[in-house]
Length: 276
Image 1: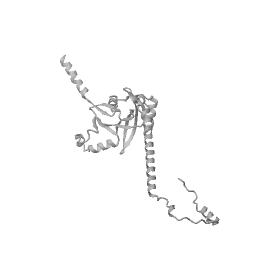
Image 2: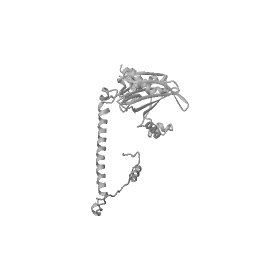
Image 3: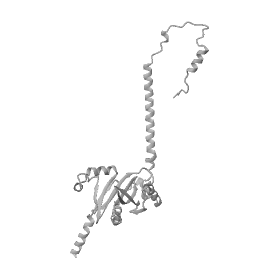
Image 4: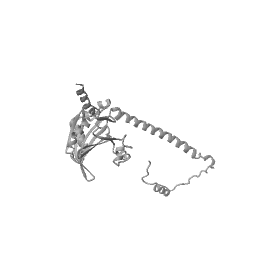
């Protein structure tokens, strides 16, 4: 009996240790060891990549440029599947996709994937999370790939698990589902209460305060600048010296300006003068 129990324990042990946990922002995923995993933390100086002739620095640059956080491979016979995890900020229109109605989830999917003309687009649900599930074809360097995406939004960040294969992904669908189904998210309470948009404090009040501060600073700057300009002009303009000039004699019945002079003065005034 003890031997049977020990045998069962030995059988279960590889299962218990065959997955490794990865955390990216609010996502935590247990990925089986059957996947070859690369992250931003392990590509520099990676011996496996060196053996393949791949520069870890270039891999990291590509990951940072494309908002990629995980790159993974899995081989099944003659087929190889590559998977990616992309994370991007999506703004303040969608905060948590899991709170959306299914039709609204599909609307988000149509806006995000309409250009790809996907063969399949549906809502995938697991662990109270909702994903836009799409399957489509894509070409790269003359090779056509079948692509499957699982896209969701949590706490204002868009998470995309993408898998691609130059052949059909059907053989890998069970392995892919394990990755998705073993993924969990930590949903912040403030976003859980406001799944569609950011809370009022973040959307309106904080930006309004910032605008008021900027306007107030501009007014203060304008007042100080105007005051300095007045002081400068006062220092530069000479004081009136009328007392220094001799008094002009009183000339009676002397016309200083003629009618012609008045007409000439009127004609000299430029038209369309901009008083601004």
